[in-house]
Length: 550
Image (cartoon, rainbow, N blue to C red; front, side, top):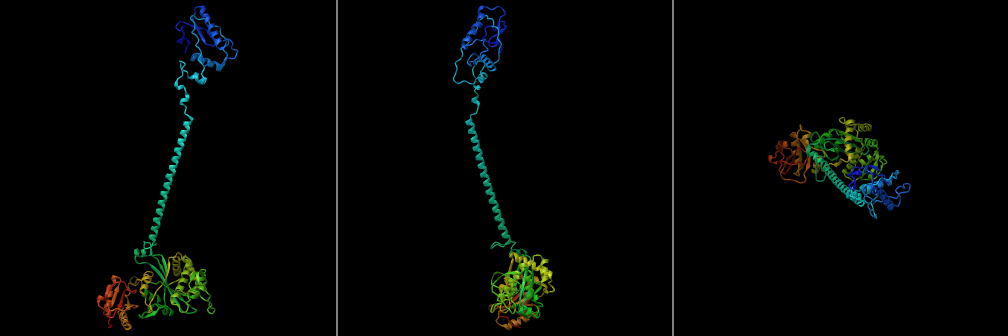
């Protein structure tokens, strides 16, 4: 702002010009005409007043100047004084200005000092045009409080920590839910697998043995008959090795020597006697009795069994009896107990051992245990198993060569290694006929005895059971059936006698044959009924007391 425009200057309206500077370097304006005496005295009075107030002459610039009074003058003069004090510039002395026409306004009295003042630079900068302070000049009002910032930071930290805790809880709940879902799927999947495999009690899945049989109907089985000949003490033992291809299960069926097998002329013969006579046609006779389809005969003499056990590195057997040593027969002793390791000679001694007074079933069970242990040691590779059979040097049935036997043993051995294997004894009556239980559990379930499937083109097999109590009646009925062209199956004697004769069949396709059998024996057609056969044959005749031989 120009000094000529100051509202308090009484001479601002008149024509003025610069006539000099005052002691503070401010321009002084005045009229061009000569000045009066009063005007000439004005600067002196101003200088004296200033000297009296601040205590030094305005020309004494070489002396140290005290700090300017912050309360002196108006805003413009105070700012100029402050800037002069900070810069501490040297201002050249000026000639005293000529007095002005009018008396200068008296210098305002300095404002009293206050105890607490805003710092000088800020006072000068914040002062308004009238020298008053504005509200917005107090910067500390707008500045954030440190305690408020701390509170905000603490709230933000608390909120952040709470969010992290909630996020951790949420993740924990999600993990628990995921774990429960995984466990549920695992349990359901495990139960489903056990059900499918048929391993759940009272539930037969499609993958179980029974489930597979029910779903697939007739099962495919491969089997061979083994005749063990004791070359030192005499005697034979017979067993069937079965590979159920459908259910992937193996089995050994032990056949007692007392089992009656038919000859070609229709007469019966004990199995042991038939084997000792050379065993020609024995497998076919067994097929007739059991309704099986045996693929070959394996004659295993005891020296070859000993060699086979040595080739596989010995076997481990749970022995049920201690076998004493026989120096004459050069038979080593065998201890009784779990997992007895047997060499070849010890295996032969245990397999053929039968104590005095023991039933034949005991000795057959020992033979089955040795065969099971040998199968577990047979190589799983069919070629390697064939090499083992060839190394044994056994003379085999022409229908059963080393490659075929090796492949068969390797498949059955794999079932034995994983526990899918069973050993069963075929129970027979005193007359050599099969028991009802043997027909149900062994012949039908394990061997799959089915005459129609095995020999569909052959003449029907007719089983004969005597419930009359008269042996002569049975012989007469047997002769009549043989003369009629039927294959005779000896069913033995019934547990008790009965008054009426009965003819049963299982397959509807066999009804007509059953009626023909009734006519052959001279029985009424009303005796023919559909039912479960007690004897493993197409048609079963149970002779009652009403039967009259012709």
